[in-house]
Image: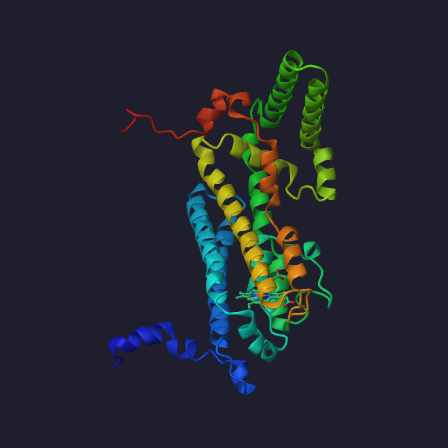
Length: 363
Ligand code: HEM
């Protein structure tokens, strides 16, 4: 009969897990003490990546419905919160690896040959499933980023790239938000009028309070602001922005994201607003991880090229900006207007969106 103490071991398959650390510097006959930390470090990362993919499976399954059930929003947001918490840990965890001195790394670096985190196919799947497109990647000199992977792992990445990403799913979900056009209420029209009024009253205040040069500068700044808003007011302008790489989100998705953000206190928008916020947390934490990892790489190897064949530090710093996925959500902040300039929603829409329960209405 299995003993209770063995159950722990067999449940966690510790025999296999703890037998999976084989420093290559030992095999090369020059054992390097710190290689153990290096291996365990990468393994713990890969375990966390596995958990992130597991959470993404569930999130994307819920999002794949043609109409996402409101009840799915809570688990979706909870799982994204978990992914953010894991990534926060992965950033902080680098402190431990940085207890390894560059010289100690150098002592086993050669034994790694071409092995590099660059070949982490789980990391590539996470990037692709979140929405990083192949065409948007920073080029590496030896060809495609996945050239060095075996056929099975390559096809997993290709599959992730060809299926709708979380980015696509969120954009589609936003674009379907019904409240952007609700009976006579047209959010975009009401928003456009509010923006023009806000800018007109700013210009009027400037004309009253400022003179000569200061007035000219202020009016020019207001005009710049107006041109910026006009970029998104009509569909053709928005589409041009997409062509030029300013936006990726659909025009309708962009409108819904603004509606949700501007009126986030409405009960029906509270969860969607949380979702947009936690997606930004994940995007920001990925960027933070890229930055910390790049700094660590610079500390360990200066400007030497990486074992994976990229330019090393320079390549990693370029990914920091270029591999951001949900940049559009940050771009939204450019188009927010102060609450006091925001028109109230019509009562018919508020009651359509509100919760039905009122005190005294209990059975
Ligand atoms: C001493 C520690 C480390 C060094 C010196 C290092 C070095 C590098 C270098 C130079 C690259 C660029 C690709 C290449 O040419 O190899 C890279 C990429 C990468 N490394 Fe590390 N790394 C270290 C630790 C880690 C750890 C602990 C992880 C966790 C899994 C990791 C994951 C990655 C990933 C995912 C990439 C690909 C990044 C991208 O293409 O956007 N690295 N690493």
